Length: 264
Image 1 (cartoon, one colour):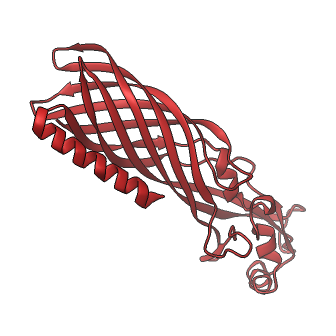
Image 2 (spheres, helix red, strand yellow):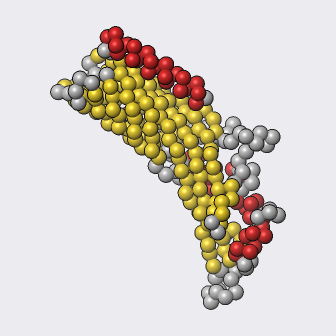
Image 3 (cartoon, rainbow, N blue to C red):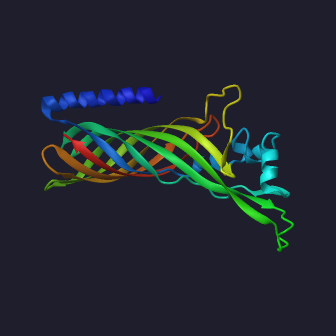
């Protein structure tokens, strides 16, 4: 999927460059910004058995890990709480931007943006320490992490509603194609990482992820710095389907803020 999209994007940039040389109507640039994914798919990283082949409780009880945890906690212990709230951290979003000027500040454009989403949380283990003076158990919070790659391809139109004195304010409508892949999910005990298993039965090299689609809208403002370069600050609101598994592809709203440097 990424190779196809990359080939498409390179083709569009090539076309834009040729067009720009011929009539000055094309442009391309770079995107840097923030992507704020909704929490819908982040529940996969909580370690719950319902969302993984071997979750936190399975890893604590299997014959390989149990002696290690027995030695670490020393006293009777139990997992008493998995994460009750979950979300992704804001992510850095980088990519490319190209398109065609339609005149009067309006454009047709394509964005290809890439981000690495991180999940950070913890689950709680209770320990029956006889040396504890309190009647309550001792509690230890075990850090829990997830890593995910996401790509968004947006194809849309920018409609200018103010275009004077080097300033161009616009709103945009776009279609979206997205690709998602779970990279890692693990917790850490005593400095050692324990990986939560999400692979599909019989397909050990395939991790959760897939291709989704949707659309969105947004607002932006451009400042023409000189004849070659334009600065662009934009906000985007996405409504997309994000596919992680065949039976788990929730829809929801995401947000993005982008700064662009545009040539052409």
